[in-house]
Length: 175
Image (cartoon, rainbow, N blue to C red; front, side, top):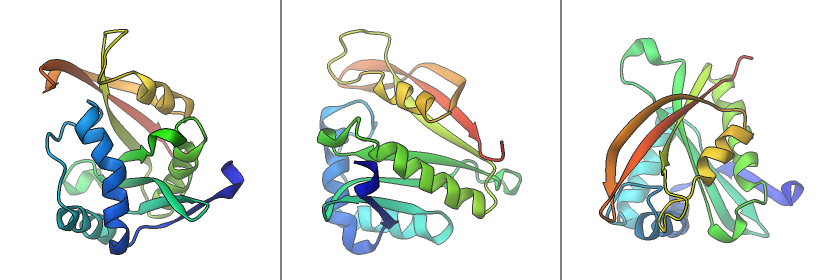
């Protein structure tokens, strides 16, 4: 499927469809720690704000938006300008079909061209094997994409009345 995926920059007109993808994660998982789905206008604002300094990419398959990835500031101090935080969200039915990997690859290329040398991903983590709201698929995905575990915050985020760990993954783009 990888060769049929079209990656392009997000537009403000994509907000409603992208929000549809994100809403699943907000309402049904502990992947996102937002507890309320943002409005379309708020999501449009997020896209617009991101695009000022970072890429926000959309994946299309058969003219359908099936995922998105974007980068954002890792830390607000100037000295961190060569680092960025990355995120990816894929429609559930397209998991395991290289959509996320394709998005990240393009995102990383674009970031490197902009002078970003290191990217970080903040990932929710569970210690339960049968957690209804969170699997460790995101951790495995990042590892397959060449990210390495670099930090862990224990029981620091709560959703659906359960505590979760947050782990940070990093990838050096210059290597």
